[in-house]
Length: 139
Image (cartoon, rainbow, N blue to C red; front, top):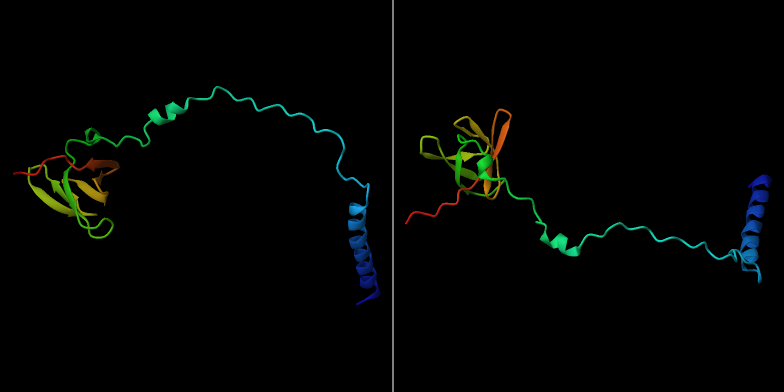
């Protein structure tokens, strides 16, 4: 070590010893003896009733099938594992039915994706969600 480095080390050590002694010296107070200034409470506007939170619906309502165009395929069912090998059973415009995999088209509508209870079709820039129909099985 050089002479300059030793001098700096000695000064740093001296400061390291003096600071705790000054802080712990009896009668030395680092805290101001003045009382803190009183603070005003935060102004709160009108608080809404808690019951109002319980009356609001938790989830947004599902899109109704009424928003789907009349020529969109009707979803009869979904079979298989979603995001793997699921297929949609759809009713065609001529009354027949057919199964579609994601990416296939029918009557100009392309099946884009499947959800647990709906299918998403596109035609050009138009995108529509077709929910599964609520039909009872034939007896």
